[in-house]
Image (cartoon, rainbow, N blue to C red; front, side, top):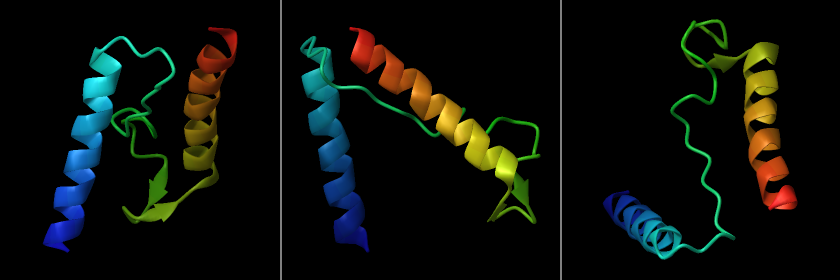
Length: 70
């Protein structure tokens, strides 16, 4: 598991470096605001609700629109 985390962190660092080089073809979707902060997107902390899927799809849609319209 530790090796997987190390590889994931390296991948994120590499992508961040490319993004910092003004590569406009890289779009990040962070999980920070993906489902909101009102605790309505999950049931019993881990089970997804329809609201969570709606919020995730709306967030991804915004990023896709940015990529298409750039």
